[in-house]
Length: 96
Image 1 (cartoon, rainbow, N blue to C red):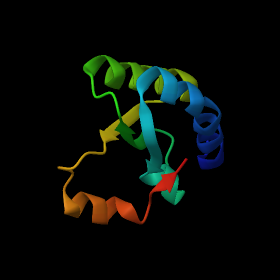
Image 2: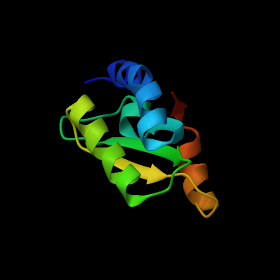
Image 3: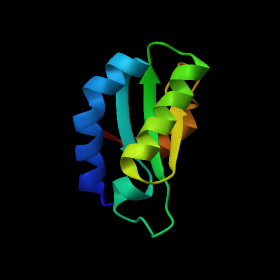
Image 4: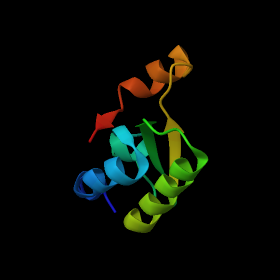
């Protein structure tokens, strides 16, 4: 799957993700966002959930992995996310 296919898949699933898991924001970052993915690359996602429960977090990951047919690495966006992390990935973020 390429960057555009990932974005389109997430975009089409976004209403469901918002309703089911409380997704407020979702963004692609990392190797796929930069167009540097390899065959074994995982898909890096930054997400902000308004319903911060383990069930929503795990359900969100499982759902995306099933839809994208790939391993998904999810970072939740919250007030305590380090400035360094945000600076490093900020230029790669593609909000969907």
